[in-house]
Length: 342
Image (cartoon, rainbow, N blue to C red; front, side):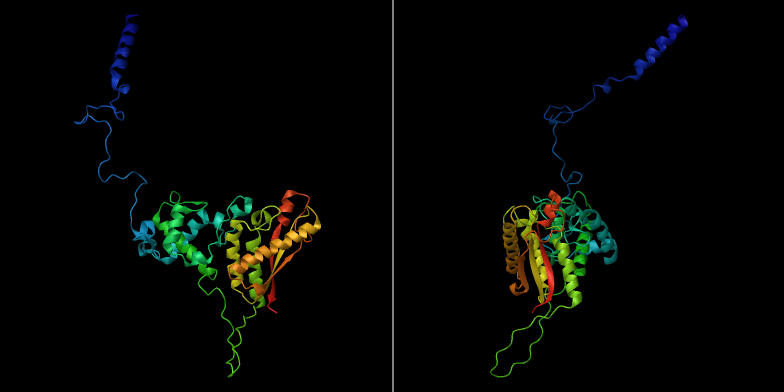
């Protein structure tokens, strides 16, 4: 009994001696409370001069902001290229980052037809931009870097996702490579065929646009099919109306650039509807919509003589009109290359 009691007292003594009161009464300071730790007795302290919170570093040089003296830099800073050891390694890294972060919306080739857009594009959503539009071809490298960093319109900034400044510049370099690969560095339209030297007293004949080759026609048709594949009537127009939506105008402006590359090709703008409603009304609406698209394309510089607008109503369905999904596919605009100008 004594032995047991002695062990209990010894154990209790060891337990008490092992505990410290500061485990629950820790020295700490509460904001705006008085403290006897500092001579001014203020618990709230200003940040020491030169302190930068994690992730809050901001500088004003071209490498980190894409701007110099308030203006976008024209070219990628040499510092970024040197960090990769050369342009090839930079492009490889840019392709990797672009594929992860940009391709889902802008597509692997930059045409704005990424799988996110294809998967569930609704009439309320803004179409991803094509990177091959003239505005972006002429934009400074610093501008593309700035949009990637801070976002623009419906696109949010990727600064928190692509945190390395070098990686952002690498994406810019890959975007430029995609633009060059699509012919972005060449003239938008082929040169006109030279006219013969006029004789005295005869007027100078107007330049004649070169008739596109079969290969050029096929390539243009493929580009147009890809561009128009997601532009259903729900994206182009409001119900029962022929006025183009703003987001459709943005996309069709890029389509106009495709058409201007082959000014010798004649293209039919076809309007199509679903089978709902009266056939005569559908035919009239489809014709109005085709003309609306034609007028917009001509306003963007496409020669009107190369565009023929025609409404087909519900005569050429591509899906089953018995379902809402099928009807949405049938409400569309088609662009069909018909060859050289007569």
